[in-house]
Length: 102
Image 1 (spheres, rainbow, N blue to C red):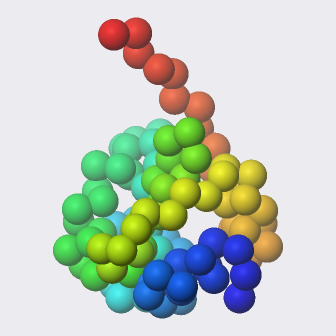
Image 2: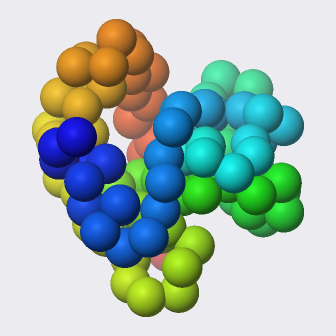
């Protein structure tokens, strides 16, 4: 185990699988919440945690990972997340979201 999973494990999260569907969350799952074509996964973070997700990953300037242990939030650079996903056979669906002017 290395990279993001090792850092999550050090904070008490036991990640066994990845999902971007909050309905598939249960203990051992890391929920990846990102804007998609039909919905914004970040709107389902609360649902993922209610279903027992062991960790949540969402995008900002970098990915912030909270292992749901109330100790800290881990920030992982986007290239590191993409490298991790590639090493596990997952293909990231990268969506550029424009920033609205205030």
